[in-house]
Image (tube, rainbow, N blue to C red; front, side):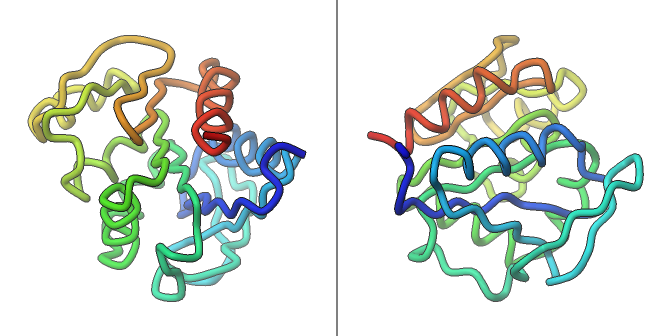
Length: 172
């Protein structure tokens, strides 16, 4: 498997978008990565439709040195995630270390809160375009945007391209 030995954190919080959490979580496992769901706390979270996902680790338990990449799903979960200083710090430090940081849909809110988009080209669901631009990013309406170690996508239909970009970044 191409990602054997790689460790990826997939963030989770209440109101996550089902496909944007589960597709990366399962697809990266399929490629051989060790995938860990990380939430503000170690507990069960519910999606927008009530589908459960268990955070295997709390944000306070994770260390940047233990992960090769982080994936930030959308839905309204990022608004809950960014209220966790430990999760915001984790995303900031992963970015500063040059590790792949991938956000889809409303996941860009975490990038804004981590203050890592200034001068970067990104995409997202159009609803948060202003947030990203106000944080200093150049926003474009494209399926996938990779600017250095930041990987961004817009919506669930972009997931195949999003995962190809993440897998490519982890394979480099």
